[in-house]
Length: 168
Image (cartoon, rainbow, N blue to C red):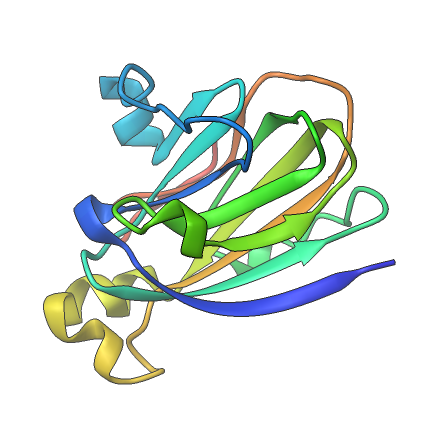
């Protein structure tokens, strides 16, 4: 069964987090120089998703029964990574949000795949701190999750702030 949930999260420090609800979600060592470029910090039980703005972003979380089809052509930046969710409770929150108040999602216990597809990045970047004042300029993030064996992170489609798209 597919479930879809809409959230608005504060992307403090230009990031949001997706993690096993039963972990500490520590990404301190995961934000390497390459992770900043990729806009994806990876730890076994937590992911840091880079954003283009440091304000509210629109987030859609979709829990799926199987891997979705590739629709990366509809987005600016698309990344994937494995995430170990020990007891089947996934947490999605802004990096400075209070974890007990975070949105929680039931997912299969064990390894899951998380695909993060981001859009409206140029308009959000241009509007900067005012980007969340209008749907036309708000950064949009779709997080898709499904059960899958452990596998390395990958950049499916890369966006640079200059607006040049580069395929990874």
